Amino acid sequence: DVKVTQSSRYLVKRTGEKVFLECVQDMDHENMFWYRQDPGLGLRLIYFSYDVKMKEKGDIPEGYSVSREKKERFSLILESASTNQTSMYLCASSLVIGEKLFFGSGTQLSVL
Amino acid sequence: DQQVKQNSPSLSVQEGRISILNCDYTNSMFDYFLWYKKYPAEGPTFLISISSIKDKNEDGRFTVFLNKSAKHLSLHIVPSQPGDSAVYFCAARNNNDMRFGAGTRLTVKP
Image (cartoon, rainbow over all chains, first blue to last red; front, side, top):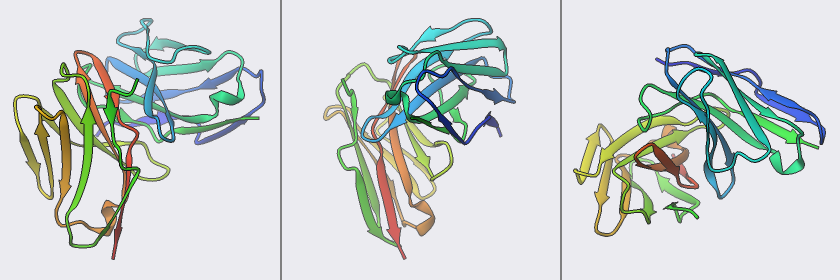
């Protein structure tokens, strides 16, 4: 089975801090994704990557950036954290884009 | 705009009975639909899917029904078990674009 590992389960940061969320997958998947999950809104796509050094904006990229220097690793960066970025962040990967996703356990980020 | 809607935030069912989770969508270009299950403190896991060329797909206790004319899909769990208690997300795909509903929290009471 695919394992998608997110480096932190819980994070508490202050407004204005730069925040790094790390994600690693072990099944050689080309495609990796960052979602955020908010009550009543479901999962919304922030960014995705279909290859090393390639990235595409999702529905809500504002305030975020990503980095994919190696195939197995996809990082989400909050350049200057704000309180409205308090959320559950989920990383996912897939073998084929548009097919089923394999998710990590999530990072609950609180920005104070 | 929410193209995929799960209008019931929660559902409570007795063990052994049928659970029916519903999902409506607005985009007729969606061609593939998936259900994910999410336990607390875990990421969503894939449960079952259906292509738009079918109207039913079954996997053990789980069956997904698709009604394209009504733009509606449903997930049936028979019989429901306490271990099925989780949040269920439906998702729909158009080309490479995957859209998720807000989720329905299912509670199966012993």
